[in-house]
Image (cartoon, rainbow, N blue to C red):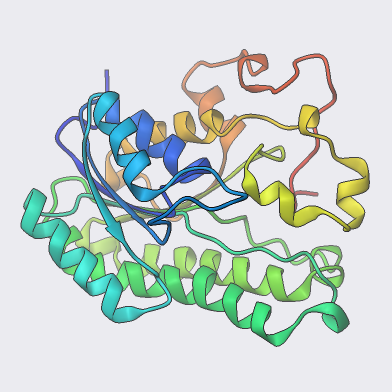
Length: 278
């Protein structure tokens, strides 16, 4: 079976949620995981730190390196990449997972929040990819995977939360451009997005929005579905797997998985479709 054993993954925002789930799945193979996130101390409302995540990764069978990193700061990113290479000898995979969200209309979006989303989502994806690029070029099967949606130009996805949509589509545009730019280097660049809403701390950001009125935790799936889908993507040959905007269900169906109830918070509850999917 395909494995990530011995591979080094640089994962942004891996202290909790989807990033941590991807890290834990790779750790089960015996991978080296860099937990690049800001959380050095416990947050009163959010679980986990880079250090607690690293402990769990090592308990699961991987090697972990916790590096406090604010991906809005180019210098911090480059220091983290250098420390990764010094520790593990290179970088095989970059997972651009870190993201900021605010589902607010134009009039209600503070520019401070706009700047945060743009700096973390679009710019953060760009700077992390740029910093890892020299090392990915040296890897045997290099991948960049962004947790971002397919580019859907239906106006409905812009009208209610324009700032957030632009920032997430910025990540997806990085995928579109870099997949072609890095094709001759043999670096696969892909995006992954969930068919349904995932139970993460980001759900707290939906409070007060129209979606929150329709959404309950039992309408979600667990992050493990994205972890399994990411594993399936990252173990493919980079030469034949690039420029794709994957949906988690489709990836897993292609591997033969048909039982998706295992990922549901409540298998008997209806599932909420995620944003950007008509």
